[in-house]
Length: 167
Image (cartoon, helix red, strand yellow):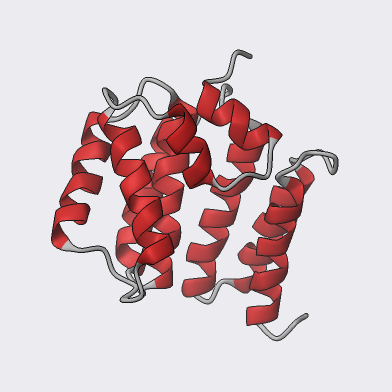
């Protein structure tokens, strides 16, 4: 499988996604520009919200899409995570339905694992801890332990356990 340079760098390093996007940014791709804006807002914004302009950019990027499904899904997963963190669970659920509609056999296992973790986060908000645990275990099983992203996926799993008081 030939990977887009952003995905190639993402799955083969543990570099911050914003750094990877900055290095590989195609300014002609609206979603990539919006993606970098989202990541910068998440990193720099203390209000835990997206402003209206950025929210509009997110919506437009979702509609416009991206030629690479892995990047498209990774973008939506990032927005799902932020939406969940600020209590916008219905938005997170609707975004996840978009992810489900585009998943296919060409999605990289690391991105698949992140999809499962996004779904697990939604299930946690719904109080479905059985499904949460199942999805989190399944997510870490998709990634080779030698993969640079494995530790980050495992840390997210541990964070979810800790939030429940199980770690």
